[in-house]
Amino acid sequence: MDAVAGALAPEQEDGNETGKPHRRGCPVSFAKLKALLAADLYRYAGRVSFGAFVRHYAFTPGYKYTVLMRTCGWLKLKPMKGFGLFPIVKLLLLRARYKYGFAIPEYTEIGPGLFLNRFGGFYFHGDTVIGTNVNVTHGVVLGYMNRGARRGAPVIGDRTFLGSGAKVIGGIEIGADSAVGANAVVTKDVPPRGVVGGIPAKLLSDQGSDGYINRMAPPEMLAACEGALHGWLERPGKAS
Image 1 (cartoon, rainbow, N blue to C red):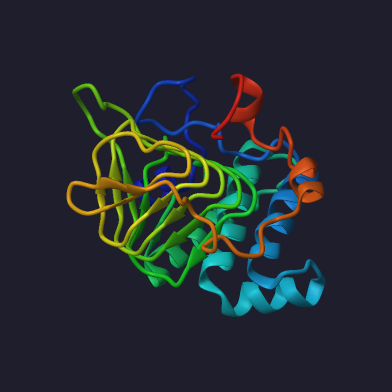
Image 2 (image 1 turned 120 degrees about the horizontal axis):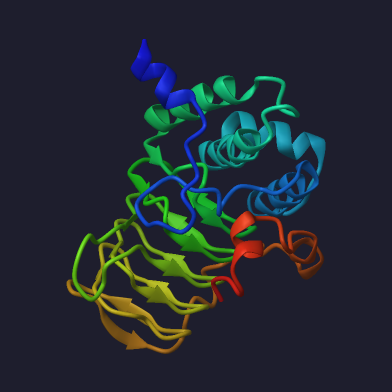
């Protein structure tokens, strides 16, 4: 009983200490939460409407998980506004995690326009930073390295495509507009517009992710999401 209660209670914030729960990926307000979810929805539906929201929340695992994840992140910081809803949404998030195979903490810093393709085998460490209009395919692992020159978690740039089964472990930066091939194991930084593949991954071309990132959230939606996450306010810049 105590273990369950501990899992549902909001975690203690600890600044920028790595490997611990934080608030950098939590939406700063309900208006920003709606803006983020609208940009995410556009990636799946190509439009934003109540009908599209209901349809994709009901039948698209990636979007449903994203809604629960972002909402849970907002509610944990708004206990009074949430009217005690955090434990309920946290339980729904945990249920979705085990049902669909998504392990993405609600405090992960993820920009607008996230597209989770298919379902099963997603694992993102909570210190990972993900930019805007990013495509992630099933089986992707964005993991933490505990020691060495690459200690830390990955930073994934805007408009990046991560192919099925790709593994990015440690403090590695994937440049904007890059593409990581299926089952690639990335062990070093990828330049902007880089295309990498293999084990360990090697640079194959500079053609980037063109053609792989469809229905990108438009500039006006991205503008509405500016400053939406605590991490964007607490330090200069974001994944780019």
